[in-house]
Length: 162
Figure (cartoon, rainbow, N blue to C red):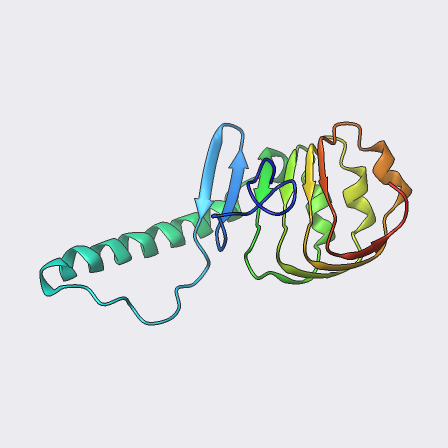
């Protein structure tokens, strides 16, 4: 458990498949980038309401996508991307978010080492990469993360002292 509500300190329970971007006092929860699978069966009398809801969600999804591109990096203070099926290396560009306080990317399929720049994020309070496929050595610079309150690196193939 923890601040995010799941396995690691940032958690994930009940929030899987969603992303949260927080900038200042505004939180934006972003649905997955694409809908998939068959539409659920609905009674005939509710079909119009159901289709209207799907159309509204699609409009919101596209609006969020446009809004996220317009968010300046220095405005982002929280990134929650737990249980999203993300794969590949952890983007080093995350370190370009100077005011980031919460980074939760647990329970994905992220691979490779933790980029060195992430250890230099002085404002980071929650750093949760629990349950990925990360590997390599934890940088000694982790000891300089003075604001760090919660750290989740378990269930990876990482080594080194904390």
